[in-house]
Every structure is written in structure tokens, then in C-alpha cells.
Length: 326
Ligand SMILES: [Zn+2]
Image (cartoon, rainbow, N blue to C red; front, side, top):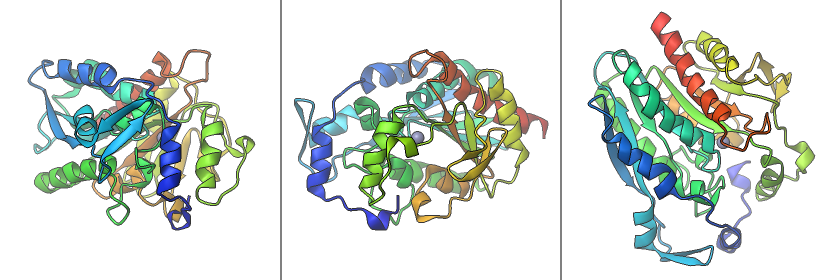
């Protein structure tokens, strides 16, 4: 989706917004868990990093409710977790969930990692974990922000201001500076659900690309997008080894025009379509950056199933296994 070919105006955005409904509660499903994590122990700190804002709109009508700019802001406070001390000499890892708010196993995977794993790893690693980058999209179960931007094309300061992406970059740029070296790895947790077949074609249409549901590939299992410039290419192999134990790896020989080698797809990330990817930004501050793509409907469990969440956690375990042994 070439941003230069965007055909949408304000009226199109409002028409899209009018069709959205509130399907999940950020307060109940995310903030209550974050609140509990504040008591998890000395290894973990919960830190605020701002709020989503309506950016000039005075109110937002959504699903029969009208939120004022202040109510919108109060509804979406943003938090990240710092595990251990990122400025000491241990390998430091960035984890992001909910870059696409509708891909819920990323949100729940990041939260479960903090709840169940972080304490076990904090002697050897430090982490910055952003469990739910796009809470508005999480609630309306969509890819986009209230202003109809894709957060995963907005990690780029030359593009329109999207708080979901820019506020994360603000925190990480500052952390990167204070650490004085690159992060060891960054993992962005995504999934590719069946619903993409109906959701993606209209979104491509906005950029003048005509596709049908049949053109949208849903790989039949997990795959990992590894950045072409990663310093430890073998880390991807270790991740696949770890994930294979909890969910099948996609057998498709090619995914989005790139070779799929045992579940690893190398992203060159240099086309206008890829401008502003979370992974591309993370590569500027970390030695290795990855994007997970889990197929949550591989079995008949409901979306966000334990298996998809386990695969997100297994990805992180793979990174840590590699770093512990190399
Ligand atoms: Zn995604």
C-alpha cells in the first residue's frame, strides 16, 4: 500500500469510523492485568508513556456513544513494562504487542510473558514490553487507529503523526540514547487471521489496488519475518525450533513473494509499501528485529486461543535461548 497513492479524505475516514463497534474493553482486558503487574515484584516496573489523543477532532462518535477529546484520552492511557535495568550490561529486548489492535494473541502473549516468564529471566536479561500499542483498535477489533492510519506503517517520523507509533518511538529513542548501545533484539507480535480475507481488500482499495478475498494469502501456520540486516541470522532458526513445539509452522513455499524457509521469511522492507513498519524502526535501534505471524484458526479453537498465545511466548523464549547460548 503505497502511501503516495492514498485516495481517502476525511469523509471516507468518518464513513469507516461510523461502521465500527466496541467489541472488547481495554480497561477490563488489559488495564486490570497491567494494574496487577504493578504488584508483581521488584524485577518489574510499570511506566506510563502518554495517552492516545483525538488530534484536533473535538469528539468521536463510536457505536452509539460520543466520546469527548478528554474522554477519549482518559480511556486510552498507555503503559509499558521495564523488566530489570535496561542500562546494565545484560542483553536487552524489546517486545511489542497489539501494534495491530485486532491481533489479540500479541496483546495477551506480551501480558502472559510479563505475568509468567519475566521474573524467571530477569537475572539474565532486561526488557521493555509494550503490551497493547493500539488500544482503540483493540477495542473496535480493527487494524487502524481512529484516524484510519495503520500503526504498522506509521513508525516513521516523516509520515502523518500517529500517537500509537510515535509515542513508542519517543520512549525507545530516549532509552536507546541512555543505554548507549543497541538492543539485542526486538520482537513485534502479530497474527494473520482468516478475517484478513474480507478485511484487507477494501483496505487495499483505498490505495488503488484491486484485490479479492482469493488474493489474500493466509499461511497455514506460524511464520517469522526476520529482517535482512539482522546481525544474528541463526536467531530466527532458534525461534522456529521453540515455536514448533507449540504450533505448526507454515509449509507454504512462498509468502508475499518471498521464500519461506522453514517458517522464516526474510524482509527486505525497502518498498514504499513497507515504509514505517514497526520492524524497520526497531532495526535502527536493535541488532535483530522480528515480526511474528501466527495463524490463530489453525485448529478450531476460538481466536486468541491458548495455542496462539503460547506461540507468541515461545517466540520470545527462542530469542532468549539463542542469546543465552551465543
Ligand atoms: Zn499485524
